[in-house]
View 1 (tube, rainbow, N blue to C red):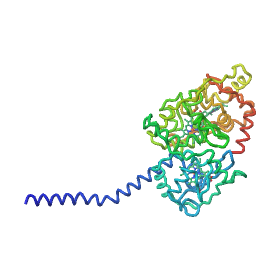
View 2 (cartoon, rainbow, N blue to C red):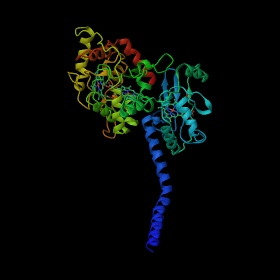
View 3 (cartoon, rainbow, N blue to C red):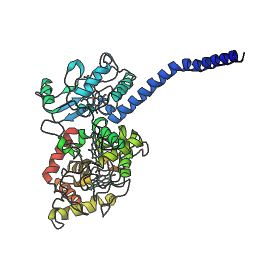
View 4 (spheres, rainbow, N blue to C red):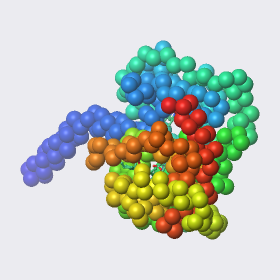
Length: 417
Ligand code: HEC
Ligand code: HEC
Ligand code: HEC
């Protein structure tokens, strides 16, 4: 009797145990899909796919943003699941080929303006999640003519040669000597965040100069400075918390982000988790600075350019950036000791003085402070002098800038604006 009751109880327990699990089985599958899609959304955010594949006024991912490349203008295609004009007929494997090998619709070789030289290191899991997320986007019918390059760069066959010379599909290689956090940071910087697309100098053929990874690169009208641990031109003087603050909000004790970096922060790094930002900091601040950190000879304080520059500075810049070049935290960047100010390439400085800029707006700080355009009231020689002045005051040291450099930048800006 007791045994039977026990058996019944056991059967009932089994039944009850089984019922909820039967009921929850499909729910768990949904949860898994949901988790995969959410993970894919986060992968898309960290990889900033939306930046190039959308117009500011258009539907996200429907394509159309024109990219200036050294070869000419390229437009990023529609990657919504629209069957006619997007990637609605694609499979996960097609997306994998694009990211890993740089091969697009109909087997065509893509220009590296699509950052597949970085995305090639993406893990299978991240690609699967990204695919799941892209499938959930609203299909938008929008035909995009991707290739607006002049002859001979419009010949895609050339890309086959470019790839042979420059591009090895290559998985991410973790460094077993380093911590999990460091390796996560390396993966974010090298693969998803594709920081080198802007911060690594390029070879003649437009490929990353890997020997000088993250040491700073010219983007025509901007200069993306070194983000190695170099103390003078890079971010070696920043703490991990200061770097995290910059990537999260676009502002820290020293710098305010402008231009393409402001966009990167708005779309991408301000939306990364704190753990991921700390991982990026752990990796970047551990990267050895390039061999020489020797100070470039400074322009002497009594040089005529420095005297003119000092006068222009007092008149036009000091009210915001201060007599000591220290600015005001979170409002006006510190010019003293800044890597951007001391970069060998002064493109960002000249551009900011000519055209001004509005600093990044994030959820934390909805209106960024602005630097006014001053090009209309300063001559080329004045701009050259004041930029030379800030590069060689308050212990800063960097090569002088000529009126010619300024005239060239005015021309470039007239083209890109
Ligand atoms: C820096 C700009 C940029 C970013 C960031 C970017 N793309 Fe692209 N993408 C492009 C450009 C430009 C092309 C077209 C290149 C060409 O035609 O040779 C392209 C092509 C593609 C194609 C091929 C489409 C076709 O019709 O052949 C796919 C798919 C794609 N991108 C997906 C992505 C995904 C997913 C991400 C994020 C992981 C991403 N892209 C991030 C610029 C970008
Ligand atoms: C689309 C191009 C682009 C991409 C992608 C990009 N950056 Fe930048 N970055 C720039 C430019 C341009 C500047 C200079 C902006 C300025 O002076 O305000 C900059 C500035 C910075 C600075 C400030 C340096 C200083 O001395 O003030 C840091 C730090 C930085 N980037 C880190 C990163 C990291 C980390 C990534 C990848 C997650 C990244 N960037 C991706 C273009 C880019
Ligand atoms: C009205 C206040 C104001 C004046 C006047 C002003 N600036 Fe700025 N400046 C700013 C702000 C705000 C930023 C940040 C803008 C951004 O990040 O987009 C900035 C950014 C800069 C930067 C970039 C620093 C960095 O870390 O990215 C430089 C260099 C600079 N200014 C130099 C000058 C010079 C030289 C002058 C005079 C010719 C000048 N500024 C006049 C407010 C001002």
